[in-house]
Structure formats: structure tokens, C-alpha cells
Amino acid sequence: MKPLALLSRPKLRITDVPFADAFYALHASRTFGAAAPNPISIAEIWAFVSFQGIASRQERSEYLRLIQLLDQVYLGHWADKNPSSSSPNKGSKNNKKS
Image (cartoon, rainbow, N blue to C red; front, side, top):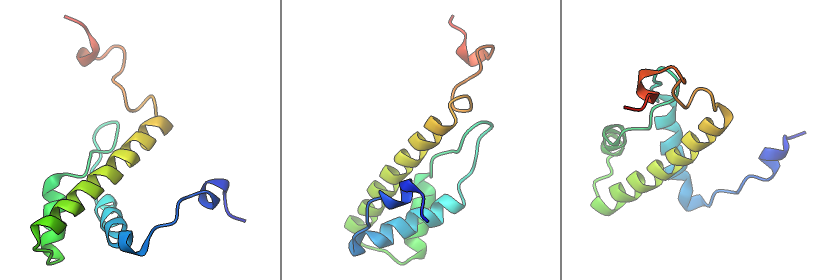
């Protein structure tokens, strides 16, 4: 029996599969900061599309746009599931007002 979240997930169009595969490959090598995952960098996306032999400026732009969009969704979901990890501690220097 599948979890409800998997039953209601959207189906990928065949034309979107390469972008999803690229996101999953880049996500697997994502770095983490002290308390949360870091965004996938433009340099990582650039390296990926170069390694894949994608030379078209339009296609590279589409990979960049869609991977960053997927990454924003992932990071937002992660922050919702880990609220204490995604904000500075109350005693943190970064949280004090000057």
C-alpha cells in the first residue's frame, strides 16, 4: 500500500523527465550547512549541463530555471518539516537587533 502523499503526487510528463533526473542527480550531491541544506549552486548546474554536453543557451537556461524552481520547492518543504533548524537560535548573534 502506497502512502497518501505518493498517491496524490503529480505525474511527470515525458518531456520533464530529463529535468527531474538532473535535479535528483544534483540533489544527491547537495551540501549542508550547520543547520539546513544549501541551495544547489549555479556552478553545479553549469557543470552538470556541460558534462551532459548540453550546448544550447536556451536549453541551459531551461535547466537552470527548472532546477532552481525544484530546489526552491525542496528547500521550502525541508524548512516546513524542520522549523527549528531553519531559523537562527534566539540567543544567536545574528538574531540580535542593533
